[in-house]
Image (cartoon, rainbow, N blue to C red; front, side, top):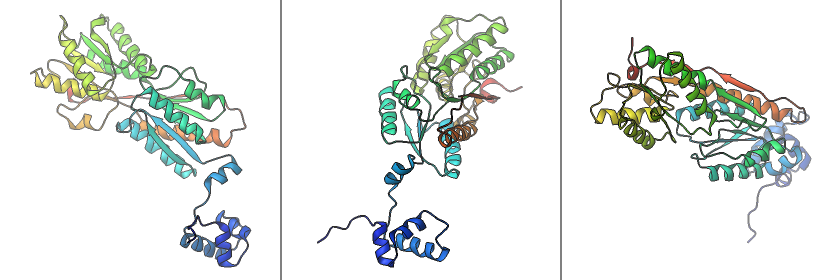
Length: 341
């Protein structure tokens, strides 16, 4: 028995007793094909299980209409908001989106990006992982002039568009808020300093402390991967200091939550004994008790802008366009963990 193969435009043409070129034009919405003929061909193609050969089409057009998105964690509200913004713009512009998460693992990030490169995506939107300190895998795209846009965790060494929030300002206003509520011994639990956003948040913290004339105690500064476990270990370490903190600025809400849970389990009241401010405005930050003061990042808007820039570069690939860095504002959201006026 003959094995059933893929339905081709020639199979459709034979069934309808028309030219294969007519089928091809109809399936590509060529205006020279009448509406009744186009509808008949589309209906027949669907009934016969026809699938367009997108790979062959991509060789002809040198485009796959596919965008790669690589980010550390899909289950964080900020990153899922960015994805929503990217997909809204990409879909309306006729592009599909393939999404991969690295789990902050450098080897996984390297492999994913190499695969996307091999699969000929038209462009890449990426936020690097915490372990990423070398960038040859990303230079694959920039060296080949394949459009590349960074968001949030960016690579300064690569000439590409970048969408970031004002992390410095976020760190400054978070720390200033704690100072305004009477804190004088403020700790900071931050991310790894090879990632620019955490360096900027730390700089904002330090400048707010300096502005207020408060000393910066190196024993009050901890840098880690900002997981729940890291947050618990950090607060344990801080409480072993001879001088205990009366407030903590955490570089993400996950860490802030783990700190609050640990303090509550050990009879230390938030914000009465220690005030807390997080970063990112994860949905849980409003729902837990006490609710968590935090810095809001406009993730959805960042995703939309990243996709708009990337698609613009894809469509104008032959034209040289200079790269740009777009800085979006952060906003302090005051809740119970830092005390309300």
